Structure formats: structure tokens, C-alpha cells
Image (tube, one colour):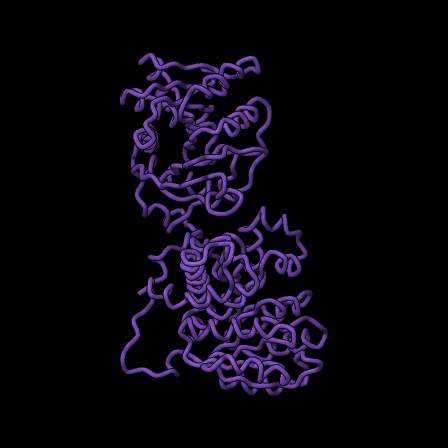
Length: 510
């Protein structure tokens, strides 16, 4: 599903108005009416009848006036409050403001602190608040009386519907600019915005509905979009033909495990089989081979040279021989981190041109020498902590600038990045950004990442490109977690629950 930044959305609107000839006031009319319909639906469902619209200076405020006019015409008790003076309104917004004034709809300015008590009382006496203060063009942090109004909205414990984006939210990053409206529902216009899809923005947006306002979808291609929300329509699985064998679905080599982390190797290998890989080989330290093999009937295991239960650099030649017989490689789950492992991982990556998935300790092993991955067929799967070590950035800096951090990284290294989090982001070497739509908090559990690595590896082995393997792996990993949630809930979910539901999740893509 197409996602547009604020700049791209303004570009689309400009083409629609100037080249196609769609009147700008018509777009405002459509946006306001679509929002009004959502408010009307809420009022009818909840048996409510009073609404206040709080509007700002710009076109978002103009949308709010259209909301008020439509609700008034439908018999709703509606009042409008402006966070600016009436004289400051211009353009299409003024046309719609004049219309509601001429209709006798109550309109008041809230421009001084002494006005706040009356607003507070009106909010208390109303059922629904429509937030039309700021749109996607917000620049800088909110302060002053507008900040107090937003805090008042959030403290009112009312149903709140935001027009296009909750006021105070950065449309491109999801960052809260000083303060932001916590919406029950957000009606965003024509295309999703990145800031609605990642945290903290997703928490503030509530339920998001995309409203069509008359802009042709093809205009997104004209401005050049690179953000996408991954939905079920984007990850349809190819049909398997009858005359095939295991070799047609790929041979994967997984290098994982150590004496204290056999489970990581197990989960990764088992999930690769569950996700459809034809043949999985698992290379582990020699002393743990028998432990792991006992529970992996479908996987071929290899015990390699080790030192105190950890793979040794002396195993390099054996690993390279196994790589020659494999289509793809995954490295990392449960390896642990020491100097020998670091050199082993570095030399494996340096000496192969086959597709590689790097996770967990394999990522830590490459800190400070990432040049070895440059331009290779590599998928990295860091969580925020690992990304912090790879880039030298603070975790909060990464969280607040997910897209920019991801884009900067792939621009430099030309690989595929899976940045794991509550909303996992996939950045491709071509510069596209994909935001996953599946998953739940129950998946924040030990071993969940190992399952994901196995799934991505499986799709890569089956002939998917690095981009598609990452997208499909992340989506179906989240889907398996969502199915597991139905049976065990979020609190008790384990990585094994996710793993066991992979086949059920994949059935959704057929």
C-alpha cells in the first residue's frame, strides 16, 4: 500500500490542482465530508449528538469547517473553536469559514488564556472532538496556548477524530513535536503517511482510515514514492507445481549455536523448514551437535571445530566447503561473541558471494568493519540495540529517526536492512522503505528473532530476491505471531508458539 511523505503529498496535490485542474476547494470539501461521515458513524453507533471542532489557521482548519457544516446539516449539535483569529484565515479555508458563519454555526476564537475555561467547559459538555488544528505541514515544536489546548483535549477522556494526522505529530517520522493529540481515530487523506505507521505516531493515531478525496492514485508514481505499508495483498505466495523435489526449494546453511544457546540454533533451523525451505543444514560446535540433532529430525547437522563450546576460527575451511554446497547462508543466532567468532564471521562474509542473512552475534562481530558487507547479497536483521552498535547512534536517536537511519545505512552499504521493532522497517538497496503491518507485543520474547532469521533464510533459499525474502519473512513472522495470540494471548506467547503457527500463517498467502 502506497505511503507518502508530507512533501510527496504536497506534490501530488499540486499536480492534481495545477495540471489536472481539480479545484483545491473541491479537495477540501471531499476531505471534510469524508471526516464528517466518520464522525456521524461514531455518533450513531454510540448514540451521541454533540461535537466540537477545533480548527487551526491553515487548510487543515478549513477541512474542519467543512466537517462542521456537514454535521450541522445532518442535525448534529456542533460548535467550532479557532486557535487563531478569524481575520487570520484566508484562501479556501476562509470560504468555508464564511459559509459556517453565514449558516449560524457557533464559532469562537481561543487566542488568550482566559478563553480556555470556556473551551474546557464546552469540551466537558460535548461527546466528540474533531481535531483540525495542524495538518501534515507542521514545522517545529508546539508551544504556548495551542499546547495547552492539545493537553486539554487529551485530558478530556472524549472520542477524538483527527483530520489527516493528529495535531503535533510529525507526518514523516511519527515523532511528537512537543505535544500531540491522542486520537481515537484518524481520517488521513488519499494516502497513508509514514508517521501514522511507526511509534510513537501509531499510538497517537488510533484507528486509521484512508479517505479518498478525488486525487488519482497514479499521481503518486509521478512524484516518486518510496514508502510502502506491507499488507496481505503484497505477499501472495507462488503456487507450487506437482513435478518438483526438495532441491527446487533451496538448500540453506545455518551457522549458529553455542554451549549455552542451543535453542537459538534450533529455532532458526526449524523455522526455515516450516517456512518451506527444501533442505536445511545446521553447522554448530561439535560438543552440542548431539543435543540439537535429537530434536531436529528434518535438519542435517554438522559438528565443527570449537573451543569451550564456541565455534573456532579453525572451522573456517569446513564452513566454506559447506557453503559451496548451499544456496544461501544464515549466520548468527546463538553464536556468542568473542574475538575468534568475530574473525570467523568476517572471513565467511569476505569469502562468499552467495546470499547471506546476518543476525544477532554475527552483527556484533562486524561492528567497526562493515566494509566487508558493501554491495553484497546480504540481509541484516538488527534490533535497535544492535543497530546502535553498528552505527554508533543512540537507541533513542534511531527510534526517533527510523527511516532516515535506515536510508542512510543502505545508501552507504547497498544491502537489505531489516530494522526490527514494534513496527519493523525494511530498507532495500534500491532505496525503498517497507513498513510491516503484522505482529503484536507478545512477540517481544526470547527466540522470536531467531525464528524470523530462519523464515527470511527460507524465502531466500526458495529463490526470492533479498528484498522479497525480507518482506515476506517479516510479514509472515508477524502473521504467525498474530495467529499464536489468538490461542495463547500476548503474555504467555513463546518463540515456539510463533514457530508452530508458521504453516497456518503461510496458508493465508495462497
